[in-house]
Length: 490
Image (cartoon, rainbow, N blue to C red; front, side, top):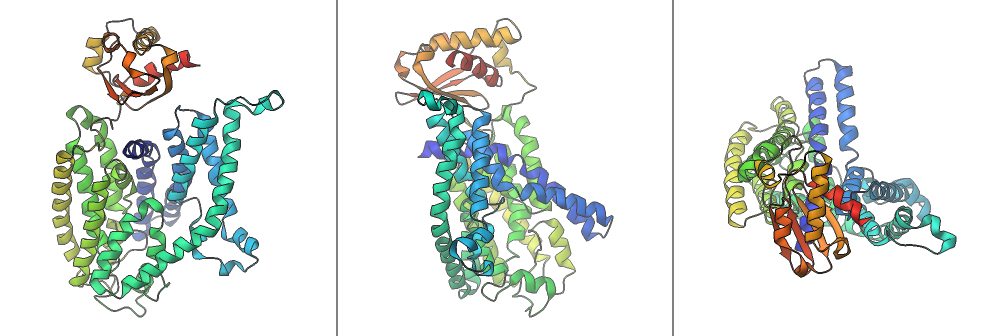
């Protein structure tokens, strides 16, 4: 199970890498809108950015499918996209109303979130597509159906599996969604402690996408709170109370998440810091300015769950503190700098400057706690262990020292052949994938491999886990070596 979540966490890096771009573009649009400058340009940037962020579910479906499949193959990406399109279309409110012969406005609110932005649904379908590829991509059908054999069978089987998923969600999703809404209404009666519980579960539910149900209770008019609406309009607002379910997010998103990025950067291996710096900087900027934190959160959510629980607790604590002291601010998009500045001129806001002081405290808390926990538990956050990012422009000195062979394609061909011999030949390999620096394989028997021969080929090292799982540490040119080995497996 741990290995599964490690692999899932790594597979998320591809879709997560897209998010800062969308967030920063949205931020530019929102900033121009707030300054009332170039309204047409502001609208254009906002539309471009939200077009990216509004497709998160689809992006994750494709990214997880590619990352969890045994080979990097466009077929599995097609299957993921097809499965996601199927489920979201079948479960949109209009069709659900037809299925149950009711009016569209009577459809459970949960189905409104069954759209292209549903990350949880995207991840589930990505896993289905990857499983289908791993299971059926080499299946040979009888002669009469042979056209549909192999990779062509993958999208077809994905359609069948996703049809079954749609049937299950048609009945199960409204029950789960309604339960979360009921839970949120129950939390309202706990005052400031309820704000803590809301913040805590708001973060914990992010991987499932059900945080939208909880948000609907506190931010919208689902239970009469309507925290965002009352704060923005001032209608029925109570100074020091309205905004209590929003204010505590500002210290987290503007300070806590950038501190998390900095902690993970400083925790990365020295040779990796150059590679991870740009990614962390873009993610921290999007969190601080716009309040989009998913790039950072998904970077440790699955590879280091303990950090995510700590993050959820600190989020709840931040909302609790802001609520106790009646420090309030609000947002229309998210708790970033742009919405914070707009809160300063909103008469409903109460002591919003104190949120900056609280933010500085939380910056220190996040940085210190994350650095300590990562080190003590030796967590594989980005740039550590086998969760490495490759620099495509760089060939390490280790690689040069270990590979006194011909340059260009011949070098990788020779290296791959020697490694393949050391692994016991192509017949000993069941599956082959790779991360940024390592070959990851399931072997029929890893006791027969010749580690010295593999190292002589230029590999940095070999690790085994059980009788089958084997990793060969290659370096930043692992993709080229993997491609050469793949040719022998076909």
